Amino acid sequence: MAMRQTPLTCSGHTRPVVDLAFSGITPYGAFLISACKDGKPMLRQGDTGDWIGTFLGHKGAVWGATLNKNATKAATAAADFTAKVWDAVTGDEIITLAHKHIVKSVDFTEDSNNLLTGGQDKLLRIYDLNKPETEPEEISGHTSSIKKALWYNNEKQIISAADDKTVRLWDRASKSEVKTLQFGMSVSSMEYIPDGETLLITYGRTIALYNTTSLELVKSFEAPAPINSASLHPEKECIVAGGDDFKLYKYDYSTGEELESYKGHFGPVHCVRFSPDGELYASGSEDGTLRLWQTAVGKTYGLWKCVLPEELVSENPDAVYSSTPEIKA
Image: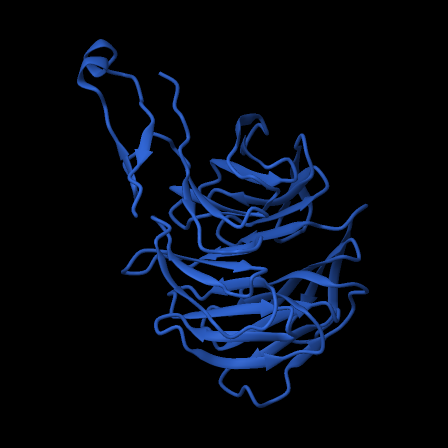
Protein backbone atom coordinates (compact mmCIF):
# COMPACT_ATOMS: atom_id res chain seq x y z
CA MET A 1 0.00 0.00 0.00
CA ALA A 2 1.36 3.42 -0.92
CA MET A 3 2.32 5.69 1.95
CA ARG A 4 0.64 9.08 2.02
CA GLN A 5 2.33 12.04 3.67
CA THR A 6 -0.12 13.87 5.94
CA PRO A 7 1.47 17.03 7.34
CA LEU A 8 0.46 18.82 10.50
CA THR A 9 -0.57 22.41 9.75
CA CYS A 10 0.37 25.04 12.33
CA SER A 11 -1.66 28.21 11.91
CA GLY A 12 -1.53 31.43 13.91
CA HIS A 13 0.65 33.71 11.79
CA THR A 14 -1.03 36.32 9.60
CA ARG A 15 1.79 36.97 7.11
CA PRO A 16 4.49 34.92 5.35
CA VAL A 17 6.72 32.71 7.52
CA VAL A 18 10.32 33.44 6.49
CA ASP A 19 12.58 31.62 8.96
CA LEU A 20 12.44 28.83 11.51
CA ALA A 21 14.81 27.03 13.85
CA PHE A 22 14.76 24.10 16.26
CA SER A 23 16.41 23.99 19.67
CA GLY A 24 18.47 21.00 20.72
CA ILE A 25 16.76 18.09 22.47
CA THR A 26 15.96 19.15 26.05
CA PRO A 27 14.38 17.13 28.91
CA TYR A 28 11.07 18.54 27.60
CA GLY A 29 11.72 17.64 23.98
CA ALA A 30 12.78 19.96 21.16
CA PHE A 31 11.22 23.36 20.49
CA LEU A 32 10.57 25.29 17.28
CA ILE A 33 10.60 29.04 16.70
CA SER A 34 9.23 30.78 13.60
CA ALA A 35 9.95 34.25 12.21
CA CYS A 36 7.15 35.97 10.35
CA LYS A 37 6.48 39.24 8.55
CA ASP A 38 3.62 39.82 11.02
CA GLY A 39 6.28 40.81 13.58
CA LYS A 40 5.19 38.15 16.08
CA PRO A 41 7.63 35.22 16.33
CA MET A 42 6.07 32.08 17.82
CA LEU A 43 7.39 29.25 19.97
CA ARG A 44 6.02 25.73 19.46
CA GLN A 45 6.56 22.20 20.69
CA GLY A 46 8.93 20.66 18.17
CA ASP A 47 7.31 17.25 17.74
CA THR A 48 3.65 18.30 17.63
CA GLY A 49 3.66 21.94 16.50
CA ASP A 50 1.53 22.87 19.52
CA TRP A 51 1.65 26.62 20.16
CA ILE A 52 3.43 27.59 23.39
CA GLY A 53 3.66 31.36 23.14
CA THR A 54 4.25 34.48 21.04
CA PHE A 55 7.07 36.98 21.59
CA LEU A 56 5.53 40.45 21.51
CA GLY A 57 7.59 43.62 21.09
CA HIS A 58 8.84 44.06 17.53
CA LYS A 59 7.42 46.90 15.44
CA GLY A 60 8.19 45.41 12.05
CA ALA A 61 8.59 42.18 10.12
CA VAL A 62 10.75 39.56 11.82
CA TRP A 63 13.23 38.13 9.31
CA GLY A 64 15.27 35.77 11.47
CA ALA A 65 14.76 33.73 14.65
CA THR A 66 16.76 31.20 16.63
CA LEU A 67 16.81 29.33 19.94
CA ASN A 68 19.80 28.44 22.05
CA LYS A 69 20.55 24.75 22.44
CA ASN A 70 18.59 24.18 25.67
CA ALA A 71 15.68 26.42 24.58
CA THR A 72 16.00 28.85 27.49
CA LYS A 73 16.67 31.88 25.25
CA ALA A 74 15.40 33.06 21.88
CA ALA A 75 16.77 35.73 19.56
CA THR A 76 15.00 37.54 16.73
CA ALA A 77 16.07 39.85 13.88
CA ALA A 78 13.63 42.42 12.57
CA ALA A 79 12.83 45.23 10.16
CA ASP A 80 12.46 47.68 13.08
CA PHE A 81 16.30 47.97 13.11
CA THR A 82 16.63 45.78 16.20
CA ALA A 83 17.61 42.33 17.31
CA LYS A 84 15.99 41.13 20.52
CA VAL A 85 16.91 38.47 23.05
CA TRP A 86 14.05 36.81 24.93
CA ASP A 87 13.55 34.54 27.90
CA ALA A 88 12.09 31.55 26.05
CA VAL A 89 10.55 30.16 29.25
CA THR A 90 8.63 33.26 30.37
CA GLY A 91 8.40 35.03 27.01
CA ASP A 92 9.87 38.22 28.49
CA GLU A 93 12.13 40.49 26.47
CA ILE A 94 15.63 40.53 27.98
CA ILE A 95 17.63 42.84 25.69
CA THR A 96 16.98 45.04 22.65
CA LEU A 97 20.04 45.56 20.44
CA ALA A 98 19.71 48.64 18.24
CA HIS A 99 21.05 48.50 14.68
CA LYS A 100 21.34 51.04 11.87
CA HIS A 101 19.25 49.08 9.40
CA ILE A 102 17.05 45.97 8.98
CA VAL A 103 18.44 42.91 10.80
CA LYS A 104 18.13 39.60 8.95
CA SER A 105 20.09 37.01 10.95
CA VAL A 106 20.82 36.05 14.58
CA ASP A 107 22.91 33.20 16.04
CA PHE A 108 23.88 32.34 19.64
CA THR A 109 27.23 30.96 20.71
CA GLU A 110 27.06 27.53 22.36
CA ASP A 111 27.22 29.10 25.85
CA SER A 112 24.58 31.75 24.92
CA ASN A 113 26.93 34.53 26.05
CA ASN A 114 27.35 36.11 22.61
CA LEU A 115 25.00 36.91 19.75
CA LEU A 116 26.03 37.27 16.12
CA THR A 117 23.88 39.49 13.89
CA GLY A 118 23.86 40.47 10.23
CA GLY A 119 21.60 42.48 7.99
CA GLN A 120 20.96 45.27 5.55
CA ASP A 121 23.86 47.48 6.65
CA LYS A 122 26.38 44.82 5.43
CA LEU A 123 28.06 44.50 8.85
CA LEU A 124 28.50 41.48 11.09
CA ARG A 125 28.16 42.33 14.77
CA ILE A 126 29.13 40.32 17.85
CA TYR A 127 27.35 41.29 21.06
CA ASP A 128 28.44 40.34 24.57
CA LEU A 129 25.07 39.56 26.13
CA ASN A 130 26.54 39.86 29.62
CA LYS A 131 27.52 43.45 28.80
CA PRO A 132 24.80 44.62 26.41
CA GLU A 133 25.62 48.27 27.04
CA THR A 134 29.08 47.88 25.44
CA GLU A 135 29.57 48.47 21.74
CA PRO A 136 29.56 45.29 19.64
CA GLU A 137 32.54 44.04 17.68
CA GLU A 138 32.02 44.72 13.97
CA ILE A 139 33.28 42.91 10.88
CA SER A 140 32.97 44.53 7.46
CA GLY A 141 33.62 43.27 3.96
CA HIS A 142 30.31 42.33 2.39
CA THR A 143 29.12 44.78 -0.26
CA SER A 144 25.41 44.00 0.02
CA SER A 145 22.79 42.92 2.56
CA ILE A 146 23.74 39.93 4.74
CA LYS A 147 21.11 37.17 4.65
CA LYS A 148 22.59 34.64 7.08
CA ALA A 149 25.49 34.66 9.53
CA LEU A 150 26.51 31.64 11.64
CA TRP A 151 29.16 30.72 14.16
CA TYR A 152 31.61 28.30 12.56
CA ASN A 153 34.42 25.90 13.50
CA ASN A 154 33.87 25.88 17.29
CA GLU A 155 33.13 29.64 17.15
CA LYS A 156 36.68 30.47 16.09
CA GLN A 157 35.24 31.56 12.77
CA ILE A 158 32.05 33.04 11.28
CA ILE A 159 30.42 32.17 7.96
CA SER A 160 28.05 34.58 6.23
CA ALA A 161 25.96 34.68 3.05
CA ALA A 162 24.97 37.94 1.39
CA ASP A 163 23.19 39.45 -1.60
CA ASP A 164 26.62 40.27 -3.09
CA LYS A 165 26.58 36.66 -4.41
CA THR A 166 29.20 35.50 -1.93
CA VAL A 167 29.57 33.26 1.10
CA ARG A 168 32.50 34.45 3.22
CA LEU A 169 34.48 32.80 6.00
CA TRP A 170 35.91 35.10 8.69
CA ASP A 171 38.43 34.67 11.49
CA ARG A 172 36.77 35.79 14.70
CA ALA A 173 39.94 36.96 16.48
CA SER A 174 41.46 39.04 13.67
CA LYS A 175 38.09 39.91 12.03
CA SER A 176 39.74 39.18 8.68
CA GLU A 177 38.35 37.33 5.69
CA VAL A 178 39.71 33.80 5.34
CA LYS A 179 37.98 32.57 2.19
CA THR A 180 35.24 33.63 -0.24
CA LEU A 181 32.91 31.46 -2.29
CA GLN A 182 31.62 33.34 -5.34
CA PHE A 183 28.30 32.46 -6.96
CA GLY A 184 26.62 33.54 -10.16
CA MET A 185 23.53 34.63 -8.25
CA SER A 186 22.45 35.50 -4.73
CA VAL A 187 22.53 32.66 -2.19
CA SER A 188 19.00 31.88 -0.98
CA SER A 189 19.86 29.85 2.15
CA MET A 190 22.71 28.36 4.17
CA GLU A 191 22.73 25.60 6.81
CA TYR A 192 25.79 24.55 8.83
CA ILE A 193 25.90 21.03 10.30
CA PRO A 194 29.04 20.86 12.51
CA ASP A 195 28.64 17.18 13.43
CA GLY A 196 28.26 16.20 9.81
CA GLU A 197 31.10 18.48 8.67
CA THR A 198 28.76 19.85 6.03
CA LEU A 199 27.78 23.29 4.79
CA LEU A 200 24.57 23.30 2.75
CA ILE A 201 24.02 26.22 0.38
CA THR A 202 21.15 26.89 -2.04
CA TYR A 203 21.12 29.30 -4.98
CA GLY A 204 18.82 29.30 -8.00
CA ARG A 205 17.78 25.67 -8.54
CA THR A 206 21.00 24.32 -7.04
CA ILE A 207 21.41 22.53 -3.70
CA ALA A 208 25.14 22.35 -2.94
CA LEU A 209 27.06 20.64 -0.13
CA TYR A 210 30.53 21.78 0.90
CA ASN A 211 33.20 20.32 3.15
CA THR A 212 33.33 22.53 6.25
CA THR A 213 37.15 22.43 6.56
CA SER A 214 38.22 23.09 2.99
CA LEU A 215 35.00 24.72 1.73
CA GLU A 216 35.41 22.53 -1.35
CA LEU A 217 32.26 21.42 -3.17
CA VAL A 218 31.35 17.83 -2.25
CA LYS A 219 28.22 17.39 -4.39
CA SER A 220 25.30 19.34 -5.79
CA PHE A 221 21.76 18.59 -7.01
CA GLU A 222 19.49 20.49 -9.38
CA ALA A 223 15.83 20.97 -8.46
CA PRO A 224 12.97 21.55 -10.94
CA ALA A 225 12.27 25.04 -9.56
CA PRO A 226 14.14 27.85 -7.76
CA ILE A 227 14.90 26.69 -4.20
CA ASN A 228 14.60 29.05 -1.21
CA SER A 229 15.77 26.69 1.52
CA ALA A 230 17.14 23.19 2.12
CA SER A 231 18.04 21.06 5.14
CA LEU A 232 20.18 17.96 5.65
CA HIS A 233 18.97 15.05 7.77
CA PRO A 234 21.09 14.72 10.98
CA GLU A 235 22.22 11.22 9.89
CA LYS A 236 22.76 12.34 6.26
CA GLU A 237 19.93 10.09 5.07
CA CYS A 238 18.33 12.69 2.83
CA ILE A 239 17.94 16.37 1.99
CA VAL A 240 14.65 18.24 1.91
CA ALA A 241 14.14 21.45 -0.03
CA GLY A 242 11.36 23.91 -0.79
CA GLY A 243 10.97 26.77 -3.21
CA ASP A 244 8.94 28.88 -5.57
CA ASP A 245 6.68 26.12 -6.97
CA PHE A 246 4.94 25.56 -3.56
CA LYS A 247 6.45 22.04 -3.42
CA LEU A 248 8.71 20.17 -1.03
CA TYR A 249 11.33 17.84 -2.46
CA LYS A 250 13.23 15.01 -0.80
CA TYR A 251 16.54 13.83 -2.24
CA ASP A 252 18.74 10.84 -1.47
CA TYR A 253 21.92 12.22 0.07
CA SER A 254 24.25 9.72 -1.63
CA THR A 255 22.85 9.60 -5.15
CA GLY A 256 20.96 12.90 -5.48
CA GLU A 257 17.92 10.95 -6.68
CA GLU A 258 14.58 12.65 -6.07
CA LEU A 259 12.77 10.36 -3.62
CA GLU A 260 9.48 12.23 -3.51
CA SER A 261 7.87 15.61 -4.00
CA TYR A 262 4.53 16.94 -2.85
CA LYS A 263 2.62 20.16 -2.65
CA GLY A 264 1.46 21.04 0.83
CA HIS A 265 1.54 24.83 0.89
CA PHE A 266 -0.50 27.43 -0.98
CA GLY A 267 2.47 29.70 -1.63
CA PRO A 268 6.25 29.57 -2.12
CA VAL A 269 8.14 27.68 0.60
CA HIS A 270 10.57 30.08 2.31
CA CYS A 271 12.23 27.83 4.91
CA VAL A 272 12.67 24.15 5.75
CA ARG A 273 14.50 22.57 8.69
CA PHE A 274 14.94 19.08 10.13
CA SER A 275 14.20 18.46 13.80
CA PRO A 276 17.29 17.50 15.85
CA ASP A 277 16.17 13.85 16.06
CA GLY A 278 15.58 13.72 12.31
CA GLU A 279 12.05 12.33 12.73
CA LEU A 280 10.36 15.29 11.06
CA TYR A 281 11.03 18.49 9.20
CA ALA A 282 9.22 21.81 9.34
CA SER A 283 8.41 24.14 6.46
CA GLY A 284 7.30 27.78 6.46
CA SER A 285 5.57 29.49 3.57
CA GLU A 286 4.22 32.63 1.98
CA ASP A 287 0.79 31.23 2.89
CA GLY A 288 1.40 32.10 6.56
CA THR A 289 1.53 28.53 7.86
CA LEU A 290 4.11 26.16 9.24
CA ARG A 291 3.77 22.50 8.33
CA LEU A 292 5.39 19.51 9.96
CA TRP A 293 6.23 16.47 7.83
CA GLN A 294 7.30 12.96 8.84
CA THR A 295 10.68 11.83 7.54
CA ALA A 296 9.53 8.19 7.55
CA VAL A 297 5.79 8.05 6.92
CA GLY A 298 4.07 5.31 8.90
CA LYS A 299 5.78 5.73 12.27
CA THR A 300 3.89 6.61 15.42
CA TYR A 301 5.50 9.89 16.44
CA GLY A 302 4.21 13.15 17.93
CA LEU A 303 0.59 13.51 16.81
CA TRP A 304 0.96 10.92 14.06
CA LYS A 305 -0.54 7.57 14.98
CA CYS A 306 0.07 4.52 12.85
CA VAL A 307 -3.08 2.42 12.50
CA LEU A 308 -2.70 -1.01 10.86
CA PRO A 309 -5.99 -2.60 9.76
CA GLU A 310 -5.89 -6.20 10.98
CA GLU A 311 -7.31 -7.72 7.82
CA LEU A 312 -4.72 -5.93 5.67
CA VAL A 313 -1.90 -6.90 8.01
CA SER A 314 -2.94 -10.56 7.85
CA GLU A 315 -2.98 -10.39 4.05
CA ASN A 316 0.34 -8.59 3.78
CA PRO A 317 2.31 -8.60 7.05
CA ASP A 318 5.22 -6.70 5.49
CA ALA A 319 3.15 -3.71 4.35
CA VAL A 320 3.70 -0.24 5.81
CA TYR A 321 0.66 1.97 6.09
CA SER A 322 0.30 5.73 6.19
CA SER A 323 -0.04 7.32 9.56
CA THR A 324 -2.62 10.00 10.15
CA PRO A 325 -2.13 12.90 12.56
CA GLU A 326 -4.49 13.29 15.46
CA ILE A 327 -5.67 16.86 14.93
CA LYS A 328 -6.04 18.87 18.11
CA ALA A 329 -8.62 21.59 18.39
